[in-house]
Structure formats: C-alpha cells, structure tokens
Image (cartoon, rainbow, N blue to C red):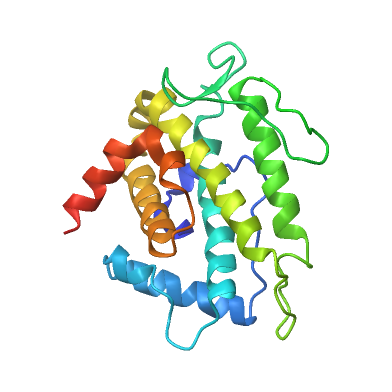
Length: 216
C-alpha cells in the first residue's frame, strides 16, 4: 500500500489512480491497509468475509498499479533507452509489446517505452467504468477476471525488470525494503487467487520461493 513509501519516492511515473473516498471500494482499501499493517501478508490478501471477489481483485489491482507506479517512478532516471534498449528480465527473458488494439503485432522496444505503453494501457483499463465500475450496484463485466489477470501479468513484468536490471539503483536509493514488501504482497495476492500462470512468474521464481519460505 502507498503508506509503505517515503515522501522521497512520491514521484510517480503516471498519475496515481484514486479510489473515490466514501465508496465501498475505498472502505475495502482501508480494510486491506489495516490488515497489511498487522504484518501477516498471507492473511492480508484473503477475501474478507462477505465481500465480492471481483471487487476485492479490482481494489487490489488499482493499489498494485499505484505501488508499481511509485516504485518505477523512483528509478526512471536509471531506466533509459541507452541503459535498457530492450524490455528484459535478465538475459533469458525479453518482452515485446502488443495491446491487441493499437499495436496488434508484438513490437520490440526499449524498457522505458515498453513500461510507458504498459502503464498507459493499464491506466486506460482502470479508468474504463464498464470494466472497473466504481459505483455501488454496477456489475462487473463477464470478462473482468481475464482483464484483471492480463493487467497483473503485465504489472509483474515491471517488478521483474526492476529486480533484474535496476536492483543496484534501488539499493542505492535505500528502497529495497519497499520493493520487497510490495512484491511479496503482490505475489501472495496473485497466488491466493491463482491470477498469474506459473510460467509467467519464471523470471523471479527463485525470489518468489525465498519470500514464500520465509513466511512459513
């Protein structure tokens, strides 16, 4: 959650996506923040009793977007066309961008360009009231879960790029505790609801196992 971050890292890559105060989703976000504060992340990600699964996933997806937005915002000066000419997560994993609408055929591009495409695309989905309804009583669309899974799969790639290519910069900025807590929360959440295919998580598999074993 955003309270994890120091004021120094308040620079975001894209504008923060706010959940309207007073709404049910805002209450859910507050509940998530309170349970996160208890330190038990496995428990914090569980669906609260009596709550709608789609709504819980929607609230957390918005929150992860904001967290990654902040984390990437702290290292944008190190992630340049020159330093990262391709979007990668270590030597074995390279990502090419396509959104199925504006760019149908995957294109090879630099990491900053890819992440700009990615975060803009996610923002467009989150701002779409037919996909992410913010008003009480407005139902989620039938394809909501598949859209949420695609968003989370793509957001994972930003974590993977930061860990593989920019962890030294994160350590210099003394932001590694924030990055690790944010990523652990993200992973426990996607594992709880089986939202990302295991093969997609391969670039950070070792780290994921380490974070999981520490929590047992």
